[in-house]
Length: 143
Image (cartoon, rainbow, N blue to C red; front, side, top):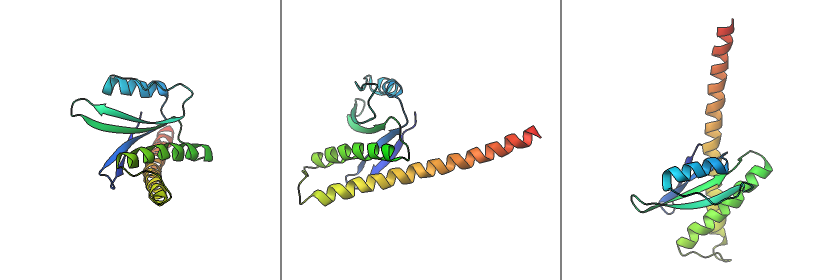
């Protein structure tokens, strides 16, 4: 299971993105870290989870996406879950959604969307480069 830190400069916090992880693997991680399970069904495709770290009483937020692809379905799931996250964050900051605050919500979602794409595109490029190098080495060994 991989997790990526997504920073929230606006409220000096952030969240962990967990893409491409089954409910079973997510629950293993949550049990190990927090002694709880997610209570998500196996047909769930994404969720925002807020956990309390009992050691230092801090809140840790996770945005979990079962399968994050660069497809319309994958990206629409991401936007859906980001919307939940943004509504929760702004609600905690006492900013309710209204016609006057609508733009704040839209920019906040866009901000996280760009960060996630930037981070995952970097990971994707790094992986492709590493795989190309590995394949070249394997080809040389075969000769």
